[in-house]
Amino acid sequence: MQLLNLGVNHHTAPIDIRESVAIHPEDLQDSLLDLRDYLAGTHSESMPEVAILSTCNRMEIYCAANDATYPDHYLEERTFDWLTSQKRLQGDALKPYIYSAKETDAVKHVFRVGCGMDSMVLGETQILGQMKKAVEFADQAGTLGTYLKPLFNKTFSVAKAVRATTDIGTHSVSMAGASVRLAERIFGDLKNSKILFIGAGEMIQLCASHFAGRKPKQIAISNRTVDRGDEMAKVFAEKGLQTDSFPLQSLPTRLHDFDVIVSCTASSLPIIGMGMIKTALKARNSRPIVLIDLAVPRDIEPEVRSLEDAYLYSVDDLGSVVNE
Image (cartoon, rainbow, N blue to C red; front, side, top):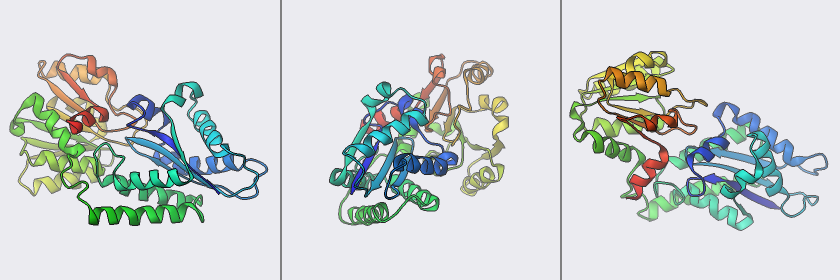
């Protein structure tokens, strides 16, 4: 049997590399099937198993095969070739950022990831939910089997045991908490600040809860699905906060209203560009604006960082705050 884990993460690759290999949820099923067929080739005696985990901090591919016709390093070489061709990348440019583990080392790595020991925030629990979703996707696509299924099931039980018997994560600073600290570096007390959250996923909900604890002047939600944004705004309105909700297409005319913008969507392209921020800053009479981009691929064009009075932070910047 051959077992392989191959990928990039926040330890080995900067955000521009991670977003170049990120796999959008809408493309995940096709990618799983395509990778499995690519690994099987034309002479395989049995069909390989594959799963893909793609988050803001990592993109990892898990493979297993039991085929006597596969030579040593076959899975590793074929998986790397598939990734570079799928993302139209030069192998030499990507190779310095790639890590891989095989057999026992691969098992250890999956355990570490599931337990939050390999996360930017040591001991965070979100990665376990993300891994479960990745396994669910692979199971629905039919690319799991007698090797990867037990591996992930064991990973989940190990993670549960680690949570129950150690203090990992007890005192960790979350990415959401780090976002609040970055905003407070610019504005100090946030009670007079208006906060806009773009998206309505798990990370945005966590961030919104942290910011709500600072009792800001207003919390607003902008989301592609307006109903989800309304539901989220309602939760904070019931806590006595002033709230608002509006569709994404209204962003260009509303950005200038907000002091802090936190974005985390599943968009494959930036939704906020230089022009939008320039217009917003002009309307704000150069009052500063803090932009926290938690998405990979990024929601906000990185060139925005060059604008005076625009303070743009990426996931990697948050990692530095967490380390401090």
